[in-house]
Length: 444
Ligand code: PHE
Ligand code: NA
Image (cartoon, rainbow, N blue to C red; front, side):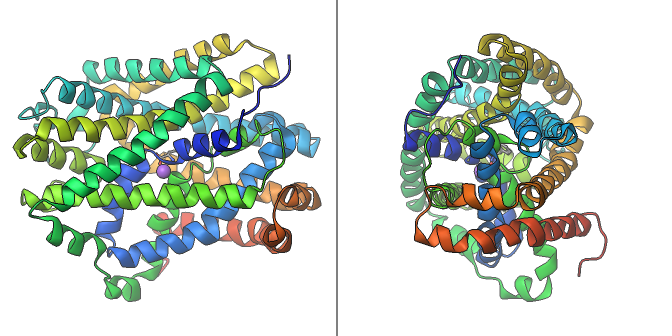
C-alpha cells in the first residue's frame, strides 16, 4: 500500500496551522503576555518565534519530508542507525504524555461548549466553585474522565478517516471557522465598556520588565514559542512526511507561524475586554487556564447575549483543541502504520485505548495533571526539539541543506546554510540555556 499524502498545499498548511493553533494560543498566550509586560513580552516572544520557532519548525519539516516516515522511522532511516530510532521513540513517548493532559482539557472545553449550547453555562460556574484552587483541582473527577473520553473519541474518528479524508478535510473547515468566530468575538468585545482598559493592560509596552528581567522573559517566551508551534514531539515531522511534492518549506513555515501568532493576539483581544468589563482583575483568580475559565465562565453569565457569545467562544476553543489533538495522536498512529504495517483503524484504536487510560489518570489526579501540564511537558518539548535539531545539523548535514532548498525560492537558497548553522549549533545551545533558567539556575 502506498503511503498517504496531502491532496493540496493548502491542506498541509491548514493542518499544520490546526496543530499549532490550540489551547496554547487561547489560554496560555494572552495570560503569559499580560503577566510579563504586555507588548514588551510580545516583542521578545516574536523575536524568539522568528529566530528559534521558525528555524526549528523548518528543521522538523526537513526531517519529515526527507524521510517520508514517522519520527522513529525517519531518524532511523536518515541516520542508518537504530540508536537514532530510540530518539524517535522518545518523541513518541513525549507526544503520549502531552496528549494525556491535553485531552483532559479538551474534554472540559467540550463540556463548556455543550453546556453553552443548551444555555447552561450562564450562571453555572459550579466546576469553578473554588477559584483559588489549582488548575487541575477545580475540574478533576469522573465527569472529567467521561469528557476526556468523548474528546479523544472525536479525535480518533477523524484520524481513522485518514490524511486526506480525515485530517485534511476536517482542518480545512475548522481553521476558517476559528478565524471567523474569533474576529467576530473580537469586534463584539471591542464594544464592551472595559475594552479600552483591557487593551491598555494587555498591550502596554512595559519597558521596565524588558530592561530588568530580560533573561527571566526568555524562558517563558521560549517555552511558549515551542508549545504553540507544536515543536518537540514529532508532530511537524509527521505532518511533513505526508508531503509528496517539493514546495517552499520556508514559505510554508513562515505562513504557519504568522497565522498562529495572529490567533494568539486575537484571543487576548477577546478575553481581556470581557474580564475588564466585569471588573475581574486578571491574575486575581490565579494564573493560566484555571483563571481563564473561572473568569470567563463568570463573564459569560453576566453579559447580555452571554449564551451566544459563550457558544461561539467555546466552539473556537474546542475546534482549536481538537485539531491539535489530532496532530498529537497522528504521531503514534503513523508510527504503528509505518513500522508495523497496522491498518489505520487498528492503530488509532490502540493509541486511543492507551491514552484513554493515561488521560484518565490525569483527569482523576490533580497532582499528576499539574506536574505533566506544568513541568514535564516543557522539559520534554525542549529536549525533544534540541535532539532533533542536533540530528538535522550533525547527522543530516548537507542533506538537510539540499532538502531545505528543494522547492524554496531564491531567499530560501541563500539562507539554507546559515539556517543549518543556526539549528545545528545556536539553537540547541539556546534551548539548553532556557532549560537551565527554567530550573532556577540563575539566568539573570
Ligand atoms: N500547538 C498546540 C497548542 O498551542 C499544542 C501542541 C504542542 C500540539 C505540541 C502538538 C504538538 O495548543
Ligand atoms: Na499554538
